[in-house]
Length: 304
Ligand code: CP
Image (cartoon, rainbow, N blue to C red; front, side, top):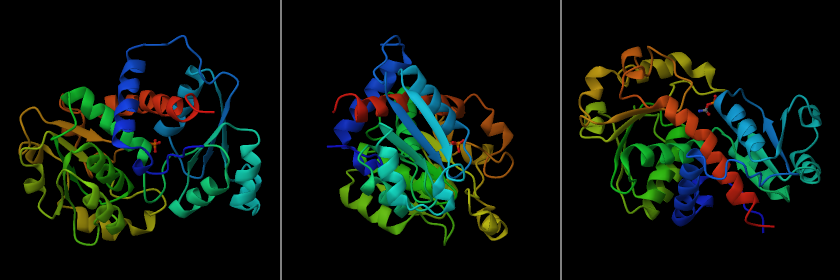
């Protein structure tokens, strides 16, 4: 049976652990000459801009011996009104998997329902599970463990925050999110994560309380793609939620700084924090490549 990766719930804790272990081995150069995707073409259907996700998937597929087929919805008939179902059924006849970046989570779920090949969520308005997988790999690499880590997320309760909640619940990370009223993470995501969590998932208002004794401190842009009209109102609410040196000083002395990028320097994060030796944002970006290669192997190579 095909496996999709639409949220982090689509992999068990043991499966995530196995994918992370494999990602670290791939990063170390293991099996660099093997081409497990040889003869396979993998679609990338993107309805939003991307630097990291697009390039890391394209390069990763190439390194695994496969062929990436990139398309925007405007380049195919989907942009002219062909249904999601008909597009999914057609692309399934050519491709071994489809990686999708779109707006509504429901749209990727509909696509996956009609697709006979695995579908991978490359970001929706609700989730960013590939980012979450790479974040877990980066924390594991830098801190040597996931269980019991204190992760503080500062700012907008957006899709990245939602996936961090699921990642934390799955891997027993203690997550504290500091966000303004009205910009909390999705309540259904939060409820499911708390029901399944063996760790703490806390939402509060005070940034310093969240950052206190944190091992990892994480932020993201205040204005997500497709939500630009909310800029001014959101900016006012988020003004006190900047990751700067004063806030970083509340975390542990060896705390590291994460940001999924792209960053709006001077807004949610200052230059001095982003460029400090404690910032691991570019390792985090690099790990998109390794973790996604491990994910592709998991979904496509070990099953028919
Ligand atoms: N973090 C992330 O998804 O980056 P891109 O939008 O550049 O793909």
